[in-house]
Length: 191
Image 1 (tube, rainbow, N blue to C red):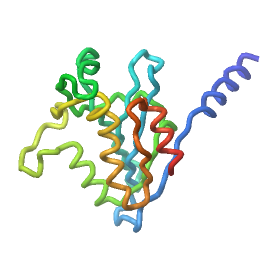
Image 2 (cartoon, rainbow, N blue to C red):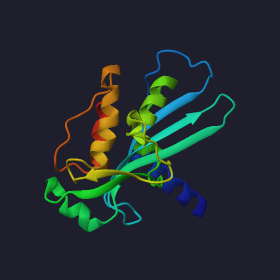
Image 3 (cartoon, rainbow, N blue to C red):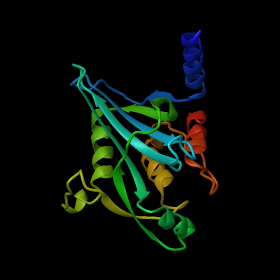
Image 4 (cartoon, rainbow, N blue to C red):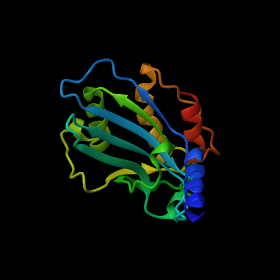
């Protein structure tokens, strides 16, 4: 009986999760690998008590099965700074940082892209000053101003997603009151 209840609970949790994968590749890459960019969010608040959050995952799998994975989000280091930054009242110091992947994969819109697009998007995201010849150690955060509802984790995610509008990704309008996970679900439904 216990096994049945645990199985039922797992199936119920799985059924409530949503996600979608869209193949935007227009050719096979010579190395046979698969490259995915996922636009993800966790609930507000998450089961861990963390606030809702949107982030982007870069994942690539080589033909032989070897994988690389990195999740990046735009955040602040103080809840007080985030609240005061709402609509630019007081700008906050934010940063692009490595994320602890706290949302399940089904809470993502994933796009499969060609190697060249993947590399360009990844490099522009992780090293925005590389065009000036300035490189940073990827283990340290990249400083970037933060303003809740105008230049926050959702805008970071949407700026990357907007790169793929020309390939057919539909980006719904973001409302000021949208929380990360409900907005992500609108993004998934629009595609």
